[in-house]
Image (cartoon, rainbow over all chains, first blue to last red; front, top):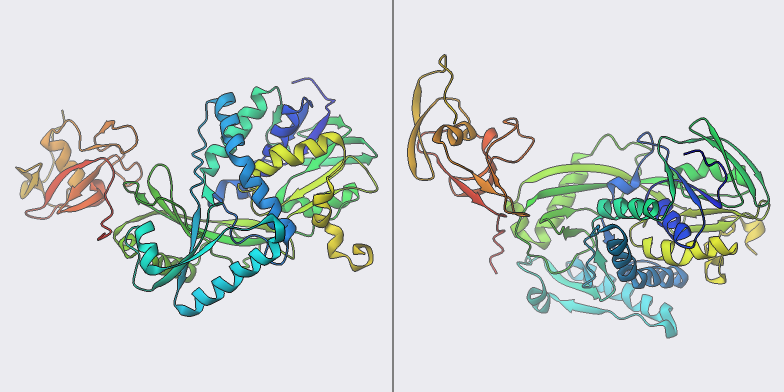
Length: 374
Length: 100
């Protein structure tokens, strides 16, 4: 690769950066995708793989809409990747459920879902609170502790690793330039004129997208941007493969296309530590899985890991264009899988056109600064 | 295809591989018994149906999955033999018993 001038440089080769890079390249922009390497936290290698809508955006209807929009873009994105690369990302969107154990959880969930629907207004939000007796017809072998489930038709899941591979292959197939082991060492920002040094070389572009996950916190100020993201650790347990039996994912348990059951949805503040796991949390996750589906207890666990979500203080994504250096954008979220559809099909065209749509204005990091929020 | 090393301990433990009785040394793994039995395969993979025999013999590759004493999907290389143990092929994916 001898080219040093591009139409756009995307910093971050995970799901967020790869989806945006793929979208930009598909728009005809010559794009450079810089990937730091395995020294990075690699949230995209550790995530659970849900395309999840039903619990996103309580109190933030713009996030609910953005998430729903992304779920709507997903079938097209998966088909597009399959056509271009031959990679099947194992997308399934049959709807999904959240389990309620005990009457209290059921009532609380019902109240949450009712409020989500209220906040959705004319946009609509289809859901049902389903009692255990009926849920037993939807899902096999539900335990007696289950009082019911909440269901929406919007949810689904995919293979996050195949998605990452598909986006990279799609990006490169379209002529995009991927540079691994290329952490940013130096940068110069001017309006629509950026110089980035990575892997010992200098690159120029009129657009730069910061999609470096937790790395954005340090990168953003160099471009007149603000990305106050911190890590939130999640742990995942994986069972041996079993015959496919679950017709839809739940928020904390899903069966992969290959048959493994994945158990997840833990949240803890463990700083940047992804090397350790906590037995008490693993135990709680396994216990809840067994309360939902007692037959899971017979399956062997074969793998477990932890990874770091990228969390803004309010848990919502951050999208911004720099006021000081127009052409520099941030993209941060903890749902790189769910939002891949929106990132590739909606956000990338906005970046290409040089302006974020008004629907994204509420995602600006200015919301964290009372002096500028007004 | 496989034979015991000449310095191997005496074969004293009787196990059944696919219902055929076989004597193996004490402390041997069920996977070793499978290979001594000379089966063409101990499992077929759930995804492509490809036939497999034990491979890594150290708990990593999962190619030795077998039904041992009625329990599906056990890593035969990690299970020491016991008198009367029944080792049977694992056909495809384990079926979770949902009781439904």
